[in-house]
Length: 111
Length: 141
Image (cartoon, rainbow over all chains, first blue to last red; front, side, top):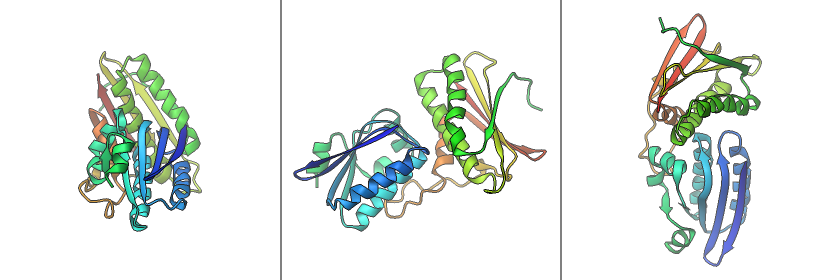
C-alpha cells in the first residue's frame, strides 16, 4: 500500500513515496521517516510524483517529518505534486507552507 | 422528516480493521452509480476523514461500538451516503476551520480532516436523534 525508496544524491537525499498515504499507512510512513532522519542528511526532498492518494493522516505525518527536519536544521522540500495529491495540498494550504518544486533535481539544487 | 429513500447498509465494529471494507462497500456503489473518477476520490477522502474520526473518538476503548454506513442513489446524477453511530454526541461541522496560513513550525494538525471532508462533498449535514449521530453526505455528478 505504501512504498518508500531513498536515493542518496551528491547534494541531498530524495525520498520517493509511492502508493497511498492514509490512516492505514501513515504509521508505517512515520517509522520510515525516523529512518530518514537517522541518515542525517541536511537537504531532503520528498518526491510525491508516484503518490496516488493522501488524507489528513498522511498530511500530518509529512508535517511531523518537516518539523523534525527543521528542528534539526535540515532543509525540507516536496516535489512532484499531481492529481488528487496536488489538489489536497492546495486546499489545505500545504502547497504554500512547504517548499514545493516540479522535479527532485530542482528541489535539491534550490538549496 | 427526511424524504423516503432506498439505502443499502453495512454495519461494522468501529475499529480501524473495518475501514477497508467500509471504503470498498461505498466505492463499489459509487462506481456502479457511474460517479466520475474525481468524485470517487473525493468520496473516498470524505469517507476516510469522517469514519476514522468516529473510529478514534466516538467510543471509549472499553465500549464495543459500531458504525453504520449506508448509500443510496435514487436520482440520476446524485449519490448519497449516511454514516451513523451511537457513540458520544459530536457535531463535526461545528468545529472551527483550521488556520491554513500558519507556517510549518506553527501548524497544528487538528481539524484538518473534517475541513477536508467538508470540501470534498456537495452537501453535508449532521443531526442527532434518539442517541444516534447521523452524518449525511451528498455528491452531485
